[in-house]
Amino acid sequence: MKKYLGFVMAVFLAAGSFSSIVAAQQTNLTTQNQMEIISEKENVEVSYDFQQYASTTEQTTQPIEPQEKRNIAANEYIPILMYHHFKTEEVPAGDGANMSIDEFEQHLKTLQQAGYTTIFLNDLNHIMQKVQQDKQAGVTDQGLHMNGKYIIITIDDGYRSNYELAYPLLQKYHMKASISVITSRIHHGYIYSSNEIEKMSWENLNEMQNSGLVEIFGHTYDHEPVGNRLYTDFRSSVLKGEEMLEKELEMRSPVKVLTYPNGNYTNQTQVLMRSMLGFDLQMTTNSGVVNRNTSILEIPRITVNSGWSNEQLLEKIEQAAQKTFQP
Image (cartoon, rainbow, N blue to C red):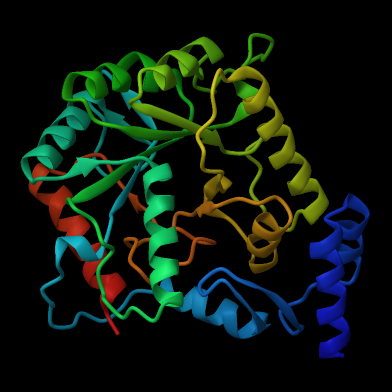
């Protein structure tokens, strides 16, 4: 049975056709099955037990008992911060979806004062490719071969406040951000519901990206989480979103990134988004920092909450690093 399923997956990878994907859905890729897939952690074909992989994934998101802190060098990891919507008024503490723009400015200043340099996800992709090359060459160094102390700012959904409030601060401090947008909301014909926050226009997105301080990626067309959706349904949302980005953006980033709605994904979706649609990086909401052992199928991020002081922001980054490097 294992060899048969391995053969079926090989056919999928060679053909890449829609009918093959439907066939994959119909063969019910359950976590009990073992099949040959592309391992993005080592970039070689291996026999993967999805049940074991799912268990490992779940364990990485569970609280870990405190242990003695280790001294982690700055070149061993890259924190990725996640923001959403910004407001001019004060926001109650503990909100992971909204933040006062004054507080965001304090965060930018704090990161600069702490010696961080913001980079793009495109830069991260180059770093991860270099790590993979080193692993294949037998290099055992623990670092990421960076010549600086890097951090990545990501902003999800594409709210208009990103352009009106956050973008001027990025210009002021000359810092970079990677924004993932829900493409169905970014056009003139979209009708907002009464409680929906306005999103940006394509003109806004192009202006920011042309500045060299912002890169734009897809957050799917409809922002519906993977959940129990058929793969073909989710694939359609992803492709439709990418088609809109290709049509409306004046330029595209060289790296292909998918940001999962609500950070929700499945093991099968991860593999197929890479092998079938060629996504270089897949962004999750798993807590942690990027290191040389991070899988490009599930890039972790730190959800920034309102009410964090400057000291707390740096502490949260340190805590995420300690959690990631715990044995």
